[in-house]
Image (cartoon, rainbow, N blue to C red; front, side, top):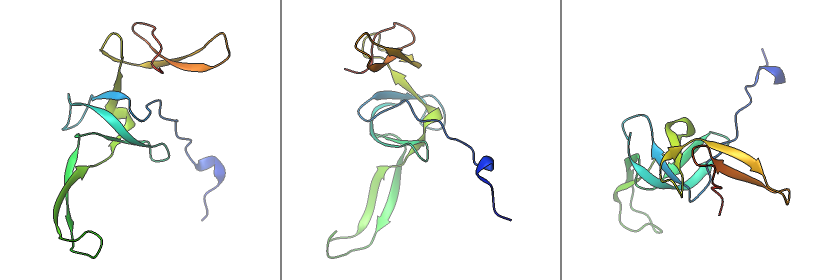
Length: 117
């Protein structure tokens, strides 16, 4: 039986962007800090630099040359991450504020400073 449009769950848009500094708040990588390399908003997953490292086996090929075991970052779910404020350097939630010129900016919930610079 085909699913209707109403049965699809609407996913939230992640507030974390590329080059943001984040801390892992859950899972086996808890407590690690890194910068965001890639954001997949459809799957709600984020790749963080030197966090959640996995080993992948590659075959020798024309392009890659020699095969072997490659260590790379695997994506984490957005719910396991928390932004680190640039000013107060603490993990914080993110709010949004509209400036006088009409542009939206992400704001630190603890100190109130803009995060987009």
